[in-house]
Each structure stands twice: as structure tokens, then as C-alpha cells.
Length: 363
Image (cartoon, rainbow, N blue to C red; front, side, top):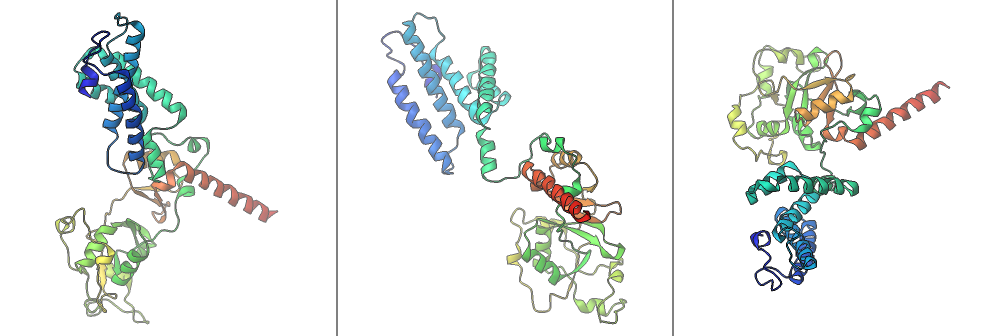
């Protein structure tokens, strides 16, 4: 790369620089192999190959201009064209402008290239946007990664959508004090990363949230109370022998406390539900989630606009958002997938189909 940038033309002999044939024979195979290797997901990188192939192409272009001019000095040195070619290929691949300008300026140490680099990178960005998105954006879509753009999708601006239309209503909730068997089965059957905790003793109001990693850690460390600890206490039993759940929510802790540093000590290798082994009598034990629950989760009302929901979700970098009604009862949950343009379109179509179904029913 240093030779492509700094070797100067020396006249018709061309003794200390690259020939046109050498640059051409290097550029075509190199950029082809770089594209193939990157496409097969080999960790070979793409920044340096783009920089090197662009420098070779720019050097070749400058070399041909000097050949046409018969080295009379009309055009800039071939190293300058190599720098602009590297910037053009990098800008067309990554669609970055300011950051690449700074990187290339630091590599050259010459401030006179500020304007040419900015014009080259802007031209590469605008030209590439005519045909497709940047390479990194394309791979985000190919891998189905739920990436939220900085601006609200245009479909959300054209239609009046509220949070209640895009939320998922199949919410898996836990109680502040829950049976170990229920928690274990829930973690085993679903792959959600967080679970709302609702207080059934107060008509299902939102109490907080619990993460999957925390629940697996508590189960693995057996941080739950035995059922006889409840039966021998001051709790009353119903006619069917079950414990009155409303009385479990008193100030008494029903399971041993695990310190927070103990839970986070294994980060990022938290235990999974497959690492948890329950004994025959553990399923009826009580797991007290009140000391570990996030009692101040971010929520949004079901009547809030999708624009407000989108900006709140993306500004705070959330992974999920609990949707509540006016009584602070959980009615749904919103994830990143629910805010993608395709999901918003499906929500609009479901709303239209439901409206048409209701209209045909009345007729």
C-alpha cells in the first residue's frame, strides 16, 4: 500500500514504479478473490482489501493518464490517484464519509487532500445509493438482524398506527412469587430473554421484569424456598389445599437471597436452562423474584403512536418494551422485530382485514 501511494513516475523508462500490466493483473484477481472470500464468511476482513484494490485501480488510472500525456506533468502524480481510488472503493463499500476522510488524512498526513477526499467519498456514496445499500447493510438484511434505522420507517409516517396494533399479545408472564416448576417449564418451552412480572393479587398490574439469565442462575443455585416453609408458617390454605397467593406477598422473604455480584460473576457465560437439574420435590418449591426483579422497566401505553414508540425504543437501545393499559396492566410486548417495516406493513394489513371482517359481519 505504501508503494502504491508514494512511488512517483520517473519518465518514459518507468523504472521505479509499477507498470500498467502489473497493476491490471493484480487488481482483477485480487478484488475478485476478496469478494469471493468475504462472501463465504471467512474472517479475512474487507477494509484492507478494499483499500488495496482501490489504490491499485487508482494507480492504474493515473498511470494511463501519464502515458497519454507523455509524462509532460499535466496530471497529478499517480500516488494521488491511488489515494483517491482507495477512498472511492472504501466509500462505495462502507458508505462512510467523514470517518473515512479522517482515517485517510491521518494515513497521508497532508491536509491538502481534504477537499478531494471529501468529494470522492461523497460521489462514491451517492453513486452507490443509486444501485443498492452499503455492503454492511445488505448483510444485516441477509442475516435477518433486526436493525432499526435512525429515522421512523416511511410506512409509519403515512399511516396512523398505535402501539396496540404492532404489539405481540402472547405474553408469557410470571408472578412475584412463583412455583419453581412453572418457571422451569416456561424457560424450557420458550426462548424469550425477558419476562414481565405481574401481580395477580392486584388485578394483574405490572410489578417488574426478570431476565432469562437471572432466572437460570437462581434455579441453578437453588435459590428457592421449600413448600413446607410455607405450610408451617402463618399462611392459610384454601379448601382445595392450595396456599392463598395474596398472603405470600408479605414482607417475609420466601427463598434464600443470592447476592447480585454472585449472579453477574459468570458474565457473559450465564447458565442455560439445560444446565439446571431439578430434584423430584423441587417443582413445588417457591421462587421469590421480588429481590431480583427490575421494578422500573420502560413501558408505553397501548394508545401511544408508533412514532413515539419507535423513537423511545431506538433512543434507549431497548430489546423489549412492555405495553400497558390505563390500569398499568400488561396487554402486550414489543420487540425490535415488531418495529421493522415489514412487520409494520403486516400490522396494517391485519388491521384492515379485521375491519373488513367486522364490516361484513354487521352487513
